[in-house]
Image 1 (cartoon, rainbow, N blue to C red):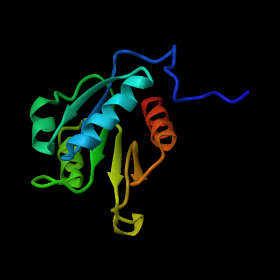
Image 2 (cartoon, rainbow, N blue to C red):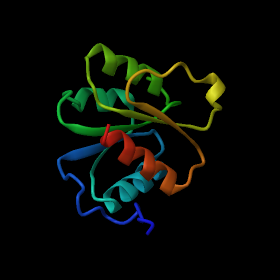
Image 3 (cartoon, one colour):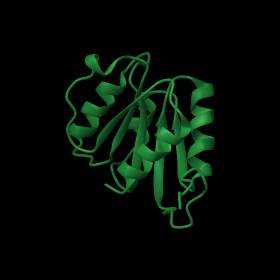
Image 4 (tube, one colour):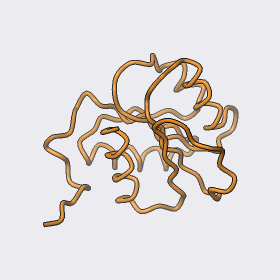
Length: 130
């Protein structure tokens, strides 16, 4: 029997937060609705700088991080997280090809835009369970 991972998971941990970092307001709003629909809390940020100013390195969850943003790029945000010794998984969202993406270390995934909601939900569930 197939399980629809889009439905709220009764076993979802409400203590997990999916941090959404994207400069596009429409994308942030859509991602927030998607994340909440699968039973996780969501926090949204319009820039890497805003996210890093608020993130204390504690708690569980993951970060949905746009690769290309004005100011600090998603890759720079990831570098700052590594410098903080933050162990939070990162899902990069990118319209660029994987060829341009640097080697990945730790709990990290790349989801190319445009993506199907189910693909992103699967990556979130995989990395939160990492």
